[in-house]
Length: 129
Image (cartoon, rainbow, N blue to C red; front, side, top):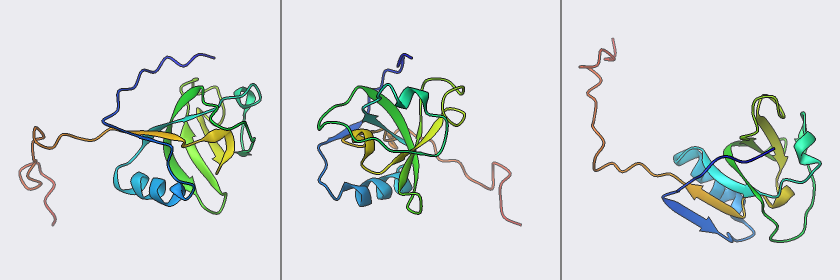
């Protein structure tokens, strides 16, 4: 598999503290999906479902994915991969918290609101009735 994506984030967070999971969950809630890096091992390339768990050496990173959610019951992050919808669960995977060095580096895309146009809900036909 190859990783064709090229990302230029607005903000990059590197080497977050050990208790970073709370911060990342808050960012997902308030900002939305963001890119993150992990170490995609040979075994990870054959992932088909469930919660993937594999410990790798420190500071090993080789692949960027989109972090789209989490589930504390599963203890896992939900990612969207760029390897097509034939990989994993239609292109998605659950990665156990702390596995594959996920979330050592995060990138956020922030909207520049100075150039964004506001839409009046009433004028757009979306007014409450």
